[in-house]
Image (cartoon, rainbow, N blue to C red; front, side):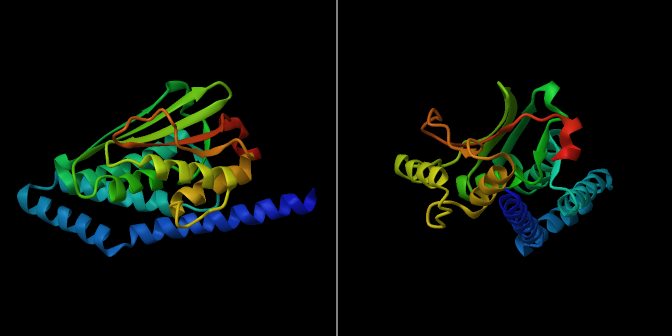
Length: 230
């Protein structure tokens, strides 16, 4: 039992570091930085500062939240704030091509979640779902019995039936097959299962519409007072 606990903690630390590194690489991606800074530069030329100031503040907040280390968990409200900062920056760059909405039930603000489990899914929707076309992303967090459900839904190209079945199989068998599972999905799924066990992690709802895609996170519903125990 002790060996198993040590092994799980070790794996969680590795996956967390991989996630931190992936977020850092995303933040330091020249295209992301250059596009954002170019947007700020042009905004500064077109107005006398208030919106530019807000953009700089949003970018700074995104970097700060993304680099915050030392804890594996945060509150759902904190995670959603991180996602909102990312989407605000992307929307400023993409303009009317990107629309989004974030929703969480009011009673869930203090729910405990692993850090950086929503933003990578949102990023996937922008990079792979839209293919440079206009689209909408909806993030919904709600309670389902004893579980917290977080749905990231987009209006993009979606998954083919065959692709969805392959991903389902890879998630159920925990193969981490790189030809099937996106690295972000695989990382998030494994991190959630390391903490919470089987029955939790990433799901692809079979009832999703023909157009677009929905990736679901299922985790036990813990409120903030349990954060220190996690």
